[in-house]
Length: 483
Image (cartoon, rainbow, N blue to C red; front, side):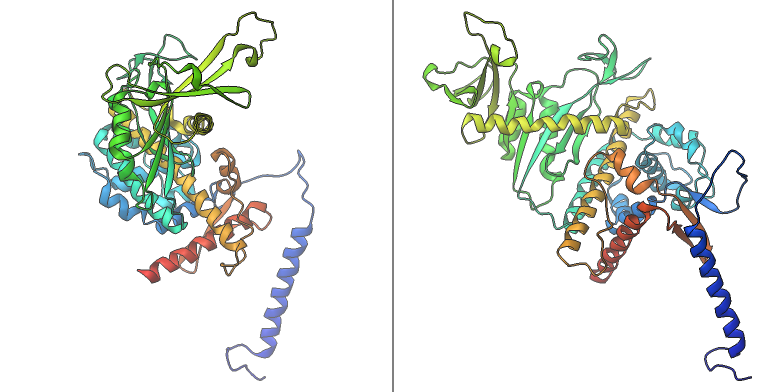
């Protein structure tokens, strides 16, 4: 019997092995084509394989490695006095993953405590008890939350660089929301709460970028109306949190945010602004009205009481019968929308541009569903830090979708070797994004002296996820070569 040169098997033995492999492939194809039948009589049991419902977390791990998240965390995060056994990085990563998956409260760690993917990322067999994460959250405060804001600014620069996104002008929309609380919660006050009138609440302020829909900065606040000094403090942070390619910043806010402090902050930083007006009563010239479409517009220069210099005010006048009232009126009554601005252009263009700010309500609603309304503790400092952790997890989703969109654009332009048309991350709510790329079942197996993640060939979403993983691997390899 003659043996082959490159193996110790004889030709007959190799033929037998090849026949077995062919039979196995035929069995797999037959099983893939076979129709599955599930009835009440279907048997069930347990298996010894490690399975996870969150197969998309592998993309998060690769993405964090691509933007060098751990390095930036070590440089900018200020650790509290409490030093847990897992370390500050893995404790914060655990809370970020919990929020990234879609859970809003620390008590929900009980549902993922033994998940193979989550435990593998944190490099533990079983996650610590819920009280461990809760005690760490209690130990962090305002200093840690401020460091997380700075960390977000560093990561934003890296993500925009990876996406080749270099805007020279951005628009920041500022707004507040209400988190109703029950019980003795520090910082809770009775204030504007239209859904739960008369109940205590907290009143966080959030600033979003209109172009990328990502969170720029903000803070958890006490439940009272925001002051002009607080608005000015947020505005003065914008420049340090934006990449150097941004030269012009446009600020938009409603009437709650107008005041000399906020206007002066915009002027000092060289920002253009448009604020809704609820406090001033400027007088507009009678001969300055003009019509554009169905409405009339006007403008004037007016200096409100307490302001150090005059400001431009524009107004939009709406007749009452244009609001849907079909009754005939002898005298015309008008509704006025007044704005303070330093934008150039005709008043109707300023008002039309301000109306695009309405999208911030959708972003705030999405942030509320991500966990902004969750109150993990009675301590206000813990709320302050948890708020920034929630919004950092929110931004991770936004940045991953931005990078996936860049991958699609490269694929359409023919700049990517492998076809990544299968990358299908939606450009709408994060809830749908989770269904598309996170909740993909996977099997974790130990093979070749290392762990592997395998996805089912019968899962339609697996092809898109694998395409995105290959894109991330290619960018990570380019990053290592460049370094």
